[in-house]
Image (cartoon, rainbow, N blue to C red):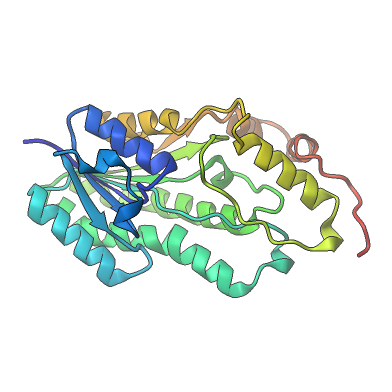
Length: 273
């Protein structure tokens, strides 16, 4: 029987690349987006099930999962990829924006997992792939909401890893480093945090811009696919991190923080605005 993967957030970036990667390898893909018209021409292929899905709505999640199983007959892999960016000084970010961020990046994944687990348990197999980030392993200045969400996803996944082993359900964490995609961070502004804020924002925009030398989302899609099929009990899969997560674990804390700060142009003193 043809295997089926359900991927959230397939309108662009990593989600779109992953959907096409699975398709090319003979899988049926349940491709989801809040607006179906945002999906590319590839979504009209015979083995694609396009589904409207808002991960912040329990009713929408339930309907999408039920429709996936009704059409495909089974579900082998869930890829939690949908996410939004949020950056800037924590002081400058309204609490409702942080709540919205967590509803998508954290609770959205939880809703999806809770909905597919009964299906996986009945099948006595399944794979949950959570797309995290290298920013889920260490904090980055002016990315506190984003890092907090990815830290939460890391802890959630590691706990589930043990919970789901008896049911032959594997949990995988994908941890991309710098990737060139259309994903953008919304930067809140506050004069008191200059020039550090401007330095970090500039570096991040340059890294993801059209002239960036960073790899595209296809490199992450390949790792997502390999993690989905490798059959191992491995949990974490770094992608193009330039060894950052290894350095963070091996170096003394003070040395690591000095390296990270320097790489982002962080000055020891900022203005008193």
